[in-house]
Amino acid sequence: MACTLAGPLLALGWTWLTQPAQQIVFSVQGTQPPRLRAVAPESPVPDLQPGQVPEFWASLPAGERITLPVRRGMAGLWWQYDGSVLTERVQAFYSAH
Image 1 (spheres, one colour):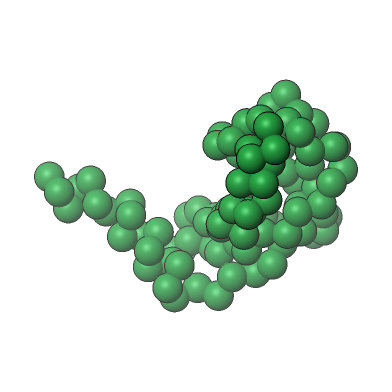
Image 2 (tube, rainbow, N blue to C red):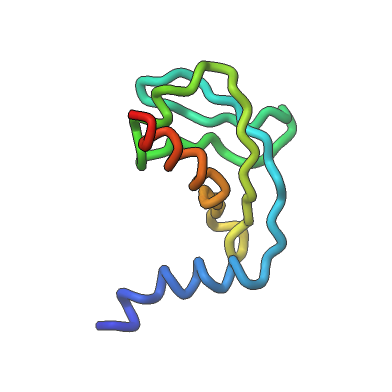
């Protein structure tokens, strides 16, 4: 049972360790709900709809650009976005509000 539950985490960890991150520039599209769209039209990275810290995302103006490290999962089955680069910015937002 534990292996079944830990399986997805192992796959994500393996991807983080073995795949180089690409720096992808996203543009904020709307606020209800916010969506991040890769700026480069030829980018294969799908749109990202953040589910965490909704107040932070809603505070960003449409068109603002954010660069996130992105990795492609095993066999191309998923994309792994690294939002940790926004930690300081999110903390500053919530400290001010």
